[in-house]
Image: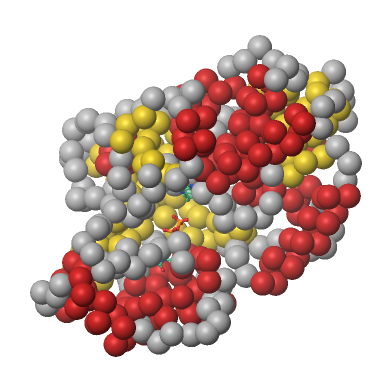
Length: 364
Ligand code: FAD
Ligand code: UDP
């Protein structure tokens, strides 16, 4: 008899499996895919380059607890991600910073002057509700059009005015020349990759891993006390209230017989192309090779559910499912898909650490 069956071997499932197993619980963790790691899965492709099958994953967090916890299972390679945007025929830093504005407008403004430049153009909106409000309130219409409107339309097939403020608020605006994509205290990549880290987390005598298994095919025949579910919550309830919208992406990989393709990890294409961005993995991993692999991201409506879509009507639908989930005894929903939240990896780890403590304090 297992204490828990955990559905999904991504961050949410793996952290819970490890925490509960370390406290003596017997765990079966399963995934319908043929690998562990969920969307953070990485592997060496046929040219020997370490790539992320489900798009570029850059680890960053301000949580010492999360970083220390994961450090039990991996060493780290310090890495600060940088992004350039292809705008008006130039490559300029994203997030928009002093360099971005000076380069685009052929100026040489100081930080204070950049602040004035933005203040003159921004149109403060009260309240700030949508992703359009956030950007226009910070940089004004022109930079909004150049950097955000087209990218957002490609990524979500929605206008920024149709998305919650939280989406574009992920990308700050800076008056200094800091060109890092993130400013978190801890910015590092697992030294030997995500998959190796997951294998270490799950390597415990109380954990059995079952791959290529949909939980619906096994759950009624494998005795267990409780279920933890990290897949899409609407699927669990057979779409009882209708489908929750998700955004998917087609990832196209390309390997080139050259050492380097671009100057930074990612180049965004907010104004042109059908893809949103190109990422060159060797920047992220530090790998040395005379070849290099890129991934192009083409957003799409069909396919694996990668992104919950943050907007009011979707949240209302999710709350109907959440109510049902809360009423379902001995089943726990967590993770990016299980709680329909646009969470980064570290937020999912934090969420799972909290849930593991709660479950263990229930003391059964
Ligand atoms: P997942 O990793 O999705 O795991 C859920 C697992 O459940 C899946 O493996 C799935 O196969 C399995 N499953 C579902 N249904 C069933 C079923 N019926 N039976 C069995 N198994 C099932 N975060 C960052 O912090 N930094 C980044 O740079 C970053 N980049 C990203 C780029 C892209 C393109 C995407 C899509 C996400 C990115 N993220 C990033 C977010 C990150 O991927 C998630 O926060 C994290 O992977 C979520 O983990 P999870 O365990 O909740 O879900
Ligand atoms: N965004 C944009 N232009 C950019 C970068 C981001 O419009 O050059 C918007 C877009 O809506 C995107 C959101 O900001 O979906 C969040 O960007 P982030 O890079 O955090 O997306 P993720 O890495 O999660 O795909």
